[in-house]
Image 1: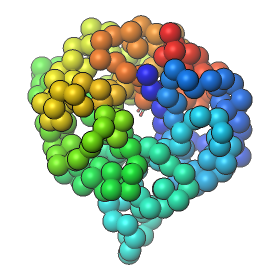
Image 2: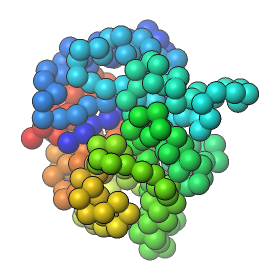
Image 3: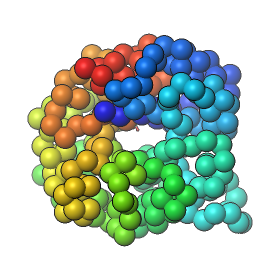
Image 4: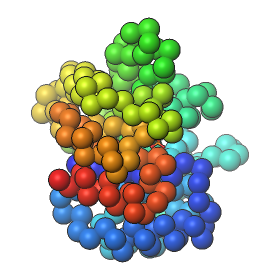
Length: 249
Ligand code: 13P
């Protein structure tokens, strides 16, 4: 199981240090669960220093596809590696919605992330109108096929997929366990098709969207749910640690 906190555009340096210290001191062993946190870029270096030795891994929330150059305001894969990142979230629905990210762009970034030995956490998920129209499976299928086009991995630990239905993000409205199980099963079949059964059956598929301590255990118990990508509840150490504990059970 894998639990990753996506802090989004929250927490300045002091607050990031405080939360990281609380998580690192409360985590105990990471023997039977993988844990990651993805702070804003400006907090990465300080968070890494505190995480060191805790077993918790660092991730970023986005990455540019070039290694360096005239791309004002952007951050590259080598820069993320240099501050200790293991993961990079790519194609989050907020990036797709507010910053025009496309499946093609996500696939280029994901390939680039792999070339720098970063593990991409590639996000997919349908909007409410798409679900209501019964298009959710088709939408996610296309996102998976196009966002993961031409990525080469030799081990399932080199890629993570996160299913985050847009209507469940930050809304308090969680997808039902049945909806989650059904979509994760669909994604599993697509991954097996794309990467072959041996690897595709082992790539972690995270659920994201209003995961909290009270619903984590039931969601994590669904077939093909290998953990969670946590937004709001990752900003409170107590809640995040409770969700990590739910993944251990
Ligand atoms: P919430 O947990 O706040 O719904 O956010 C989920 C998410 O977008 C994680 O990437």
